[in-house]
Image (cartoon, rainbow, N blue to C red; front, side, top):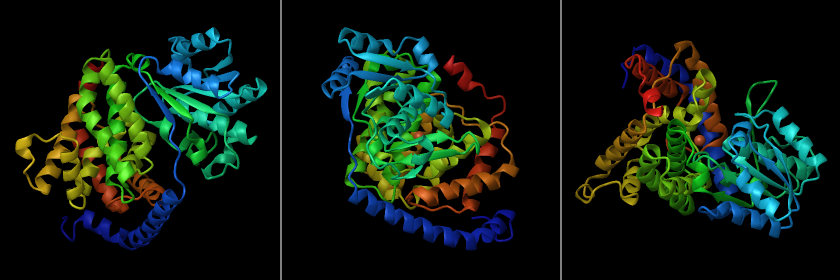
Length: 435
Ligand SMILES: [Fe+2]
């Protein structure tokens, strides 16, 4: 605890009244979301796994009546020839298709609208997304806009679509976002430069293919960043106040897989079993992740302020938020440690407190093992206010977390990150390991 007259204590006192109101709103929203998630059961995409998964997914497209397919991807993947696995198969079955490779990282409405105009003009009746989270999110917005005959901006918010989208199928090329399993999509607003979110169960794709061969070309640093993103989805879902038996199952399965297979996939990208297990973990993390928390909320702000990739930002924040949650979630963290078998038999008799600490230490070690640089370059104290307020708002608007932090609590985490960053000058571990 800070001394009562310390600057940190004053900061916390100033926040007190604001925090009380924020807490009440956040808890009410969390309860409403819990009711909502019970009233509206979420559909699950049919999952194909393995080296034939893409072909099986294409068979489904054809069997469901797809005759003219719109393939959504990005220019890098298209140049690498990744969509050929799909287009060759469609050629063999005389199915027409058109490839749109204009998706950029953090796609804007303009990017989505361009894809929409192409699929509408070509009268496509099915969409296959081949790519990471940005491609899949853009494809979701294109499919829903085409199906609802509206501009994508009209879909921003919760349950804005009246009809289903055009049938959507996904082939993730990274094991990270699990976007192929989620009911949301993020688009960047060209004018405000803010990210806009569309949430609707109708957005969940019909099917997804986890193909380890497609994932084996992923560079080491992207394997590491996206892998920790999966772990974060799983842990935030596990610790959510709205966790259920179902989300617990997916969150624990994803956690166990990441702990076991991420170091292998990182060390040897050609290991197809590790790639496949990480692909399934990402999918499971996506299913469970409809419950997020403070790690993502703070990481989103670090990413926006200091251009840090999403997975790496999560990896930087995750250990600190786990520490904050540790006391209130000791039993839950200990249960996860036992469930995911990351404790050796001799340690299984340890107390909940010891196991929770052990689990957090394992997470720290994993982040270190996969070479993630935990520093934030160019961090400024003058940014703290904006970051903390925006992160607190994101949580109160959307998430059900086990421990609600005030903006002052978030600023303490930011201070710890900055101190750790300054204590590690000239850190080039990430660059060396990723090379
Ligand atoms: Fe994420």
